[in-house]
Length: 287
Ligand SMILES: Nc1ncnc2c1ncn2[C@@H]1O[C@H](COP(=O)(O)OP(=O)(O)O)[C@@H](O)[C@H]1O
Ligand SMILES: [Mg+2]
Image (cartoon, rainbow, N blue to C red; front, side):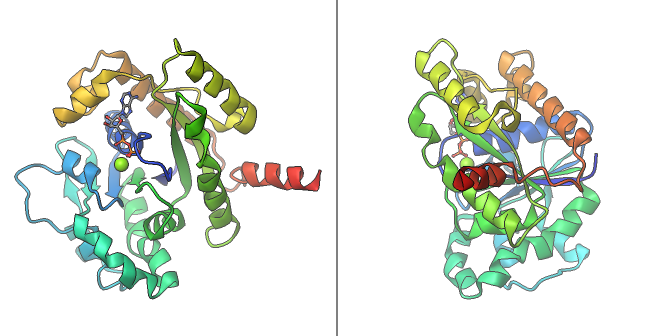
């Protein structure tokens, strides 16, 4: 498996992007992989989760991007990255004030969109097996920046109601647009269905609609069940694997990590698999 950068994207909040970034990273690190987690959301939930409490004045994505000069040397990049209390997991933290950079970034959109690619990509691929980018709940400059820096995208979606599928096409269209234009190497990896409660008819209906609309081959076979353990673990500032290693939530996260590694092992990085949705769309248009 080659080193890979994965963006976690969904323009909706609360679907589990941060939960996935933190818990999946831990599962991958437990499999012996070095993982860098980049927090691109200025709400900084991932940062507060991972950053050891004794570190208060830290350098962050804000400092990395504030002067937007590309190709910073390794000696400088290293200063923005912190070890966490999870062996094998490092963090590029964020701070709320990075939201204030947006107007500056929009002054030169091309430089902004390529900022992460030009400043983090080579470093991440050289030093880590996985770089997981946790994105904010919108499709703005931070998400575009992440998509340009990434090899593939995971889109978590919340099960439970048809409404959670609304808006999904925007995320998928954006991923396809980026892969058809500015980052041809980008591929859509899988949808991940989160907060599943199979006892609910609404969940079962939503799952069958997902399979019908998007195809099982575009969805992880592992789904994450709705479980209070996520919230309990979160308030204890722990991953579910650390909070309750034998829970079914932990087992599902481990299965997801294993499934991801299997998919990537089989991935021929030269083969263009990521265009599936756009090919489907083109077929539909042609009909
Ligand atoms: N499978 C799950 N079961 C129950 N609660 C979950 C699950 N996944 C995530 N949550 C909870 O849902 C909330 C939103 O998740 P979060 O990862 O912060 O979403 P996002 O980053 O997409 O905004 C959090 O409180 C989290 O603990
Ligand atoms: Mg989040």
